[in-house]
Structures are given as C-alpha cells and as structure tokens.
Length: 202
Image (tube, rainbow, N blue to C red; front, top):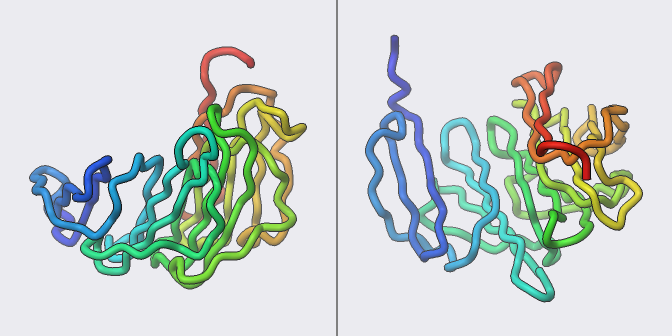
C-alpha cells in the first residue's frame, strides 16, 4: 500500500496557531499562523492541501461570522470579502478553486449560501438557493455538484436537503423525509450522496 506523502492536514483551534501534519496525519506539530483566534466551525481544502478555507459562526448575539482563506497550506490567512453571517459549513473542489459556504445552524438562525470560483478571493450569493438553517454542505471534486442540508428553524425550507448540478445556479429539493439533517457528503463525481440526521424529528 502506497503512502500519500504529499498529504497535508490542518486542525484549527481557538488559538492563533494550527496543528499541521504532512505524513498521513500521524504526526502533528504546532505551526505559527496569521489566522485570528476564533471559534472555527468548519474547514475544507484542496486535494494537495495548498488552498484552505475556514469559517466562523460569530458570537452571541449578532453571530456575524467570518471566512478566512489560505493559499499556502495555512501559513498565512486572509479574511474573505463575503458578508458577516453565521457560517456553519464549507466545502471545496479538489483544485481549491471552487468554494461553497453555508450559513445558519441550530444556534444561529437562517442563512444563505455563497460561492467562490477563484479560491475565495471574491464571493457571490447563490441567489436561487433557498434561505434555510443550513448545517452542512458538500461538493463534488470538480465543484459543479453541490448538496446542502438544513435543520429546523423559522424558515419554511427547514428539515430538507437541496442539491445543485451546476455550481449553485439552480437548486432542487431531494424530497427526503423531514429529519433534523446534520451532515452531508458525496462521491468525487457527485453522483452518490449521503446524509445523516440526528435521532428523531424536530
């Protein structure tokens, strides 16, 4: 069995540093980073670990969260131009050029979905996506197929899963049961999707 020697991994914490690994995530070392000390909610990265994105939901009562990106494996981080929302989840294409972030969550209320096609330098609202309490987002390797899950809340789109086949231009409901959806994932081509719900309905 071949070892993936180029694999990189990052663990974010509430401290202004990260834990990095370059060998199968077996050995971790603390590395200095310019990322601020925030409560990070979700992270994603390119297949080679060079492009990284991290999201923060913000804090009570405003929950004005931030998005930070890195193009050098986490050594330096830059704040994104996306609006301050209660960001809950992020996903990336394998080359790191296409990013998708979702806002919302059980504590934070409803939110929107934003997209970037230039590794996080610019962001646009997925205007055709419903507003919901988004909890999780996943992406195919090329970034074209997206899937998002929502939990209950004030939105009529709660407890549902939506998918996009064209990088957020159009969205359709997967017509799944109304469960408290907590996480989604998909295969590299996006043809196979899986979702997990918390126990019982809300």
